[in-house]
Figure 1: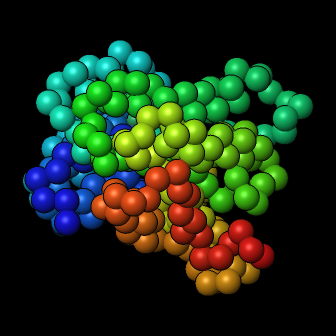
Figure 2 (figure 1 turned 45 degrees about the vertical axis):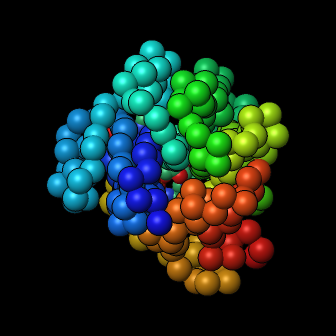
Length: 236
Ligand SMILES: NC(=O)c1ccc[n+]([C@@H]2O[C@H](COP(=O)([O-])OP(=O)(O)OC[C@H]3O[C@@H](n4cnc5c(N)ncnc54)[C@H](OP(=O)(O)O)[C@@H]3O)[C@@H](O)[C@H]2O)c1
């Protein structure tokens, strides 16, 4: 249980972050969901009883600092925010690729710098890696290095900043609104050919990823860990 513990979810208005917010509320946490879009946050608040919401952008250091400056203490932080740019490493401006890397890796570091002093010993940060750390996907090369770097960030910060705990979750192909932006016609259904080859031949659900994040928050013996929730996708 996370009774009365303060959980902050950066990227908590949709998808995996929203599922984590809902799961944490269901075990008694006070949950603050954060994202860039007020309308999405208000929709999330309608879905999850007792959810608190705040607008902030992980790409904007000042907004992340302001977010945590307003909180007296924090038990657990989950960082879901992060996006992908697909393309050849030889084409297009490097700036956009660099931004995707910075957002996921340095965005997570910014969150830690702003929040660490509020987190009690045994409290935790959980970052988001991904399948492409272990199984690179053609075109998603920046995502692969950014998720791998973020999983490694959890391990190095576990060492640097103990007894606060640092972990990551590595989702496989997960049924979330993210895919509506990639495949506007069909969303995550476009992945059915890919997922039928997996050991468990279907998409992961956001709730299944959230269960792993809740374990990482609640089990105070786990630090420096990455939990894969991928239907066995990295093994085939
Ligand atoms: N879905 C998958 O198959 C999959 C697989 C592996 C890894 N992942 C990773 O898992 C994480 C969550 O993915 P998802 O599928 O749940 O994505 P999603 O459905 O697109 O949700 C992303 C959430 O993050 C928020 N967000 C995005 N950029 C932000 C920013 N700069 N600052 C603050 N909040 C921000 C979004 O709200 P606003 O737009 O309002 O900011 C939204 O609440 C991402 O890092 C993604 O790369 C996903």
